[in-house]
Length: 436
Image: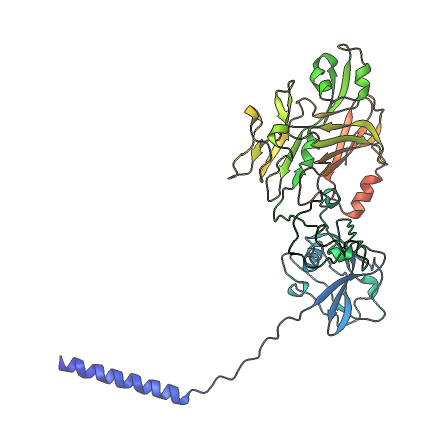
């Protein structure tokens, strides 16, 4: 026992000695090199001619505005830059100083920028400094940033109590919908019309953090399109719901037929809020033929256009009963048409209108053989708010030879680059049925 106690004190003394030696010999560690924080770069879009959401990329660095070289520039770089400037994303980018060359002999600050697309700033992306004559202003990069079309010009104006307003600052405000600030819109300037009217005419808005966003599944339209010659005696309901061209009224009912271009439509809600009809249940219209209520007078426009945009088939304005046909995994259906149920499309769900249901067609009986554009527009009158209306239209190239139809190149309106859109619009038509 005593031997064990002596050993413990020896161990303690040795430990204290080691600690004393270590403390006496230890020297303060010199501070290591500090990493300078990343510079607060400023970016802007410049050049001419351009809109406010596009232009040559300019960077303010070392007290001087410069440009970015287009070597290895990508759409991911453009996405990062557009988000940095306050836009949602980019729709494309341009090379070879499309919006003009940078000013004089000004610097080119960045080259071979390689972003993943998730960075908060271009400065966070790998890049190469310009240290030799490997890039000139003829290679200045430019971007085009996306402006979701919100249909602002169709909003209703309301007035309410503004007793807490102390001063009127703007009047006569007219916006196109793409401006980043009310100050960018047309207005009366210093000549206020409401200066002496108190607060009776103060305007206000109701903002929402969430909205629906409908998107048509374009490949399904292309995969399911076909022609059917449907007997008139099977089209009485369709005629009642105005799903046929006006020439059908002159037909020899119930004999003869109408030629229909049929296809399926699958409409997804990719937004952050359910798509609900604007009208309340009390104003929904009962359709006896189809045995359900229609909650929207016009939900889609179906059109056949010439390449220059002229309608050749009377635009069929389809009204539907809105419901959740299918949903993504872990998303529950909320809306169904049966039994006067609630109508709408849940976030993460889609409403499917099969090619074989009534009115899911365009009446092409009076269309002559030729090359055309098939166009489908969802929510065409902006009756229901969405976060983005630019993706509500779908277009396809199609060739009709009088007996058969070939539908191809179906895409959402904003899905193609500027160059690809021009090729689509200038499409000369098919010489045969070989679709490349």
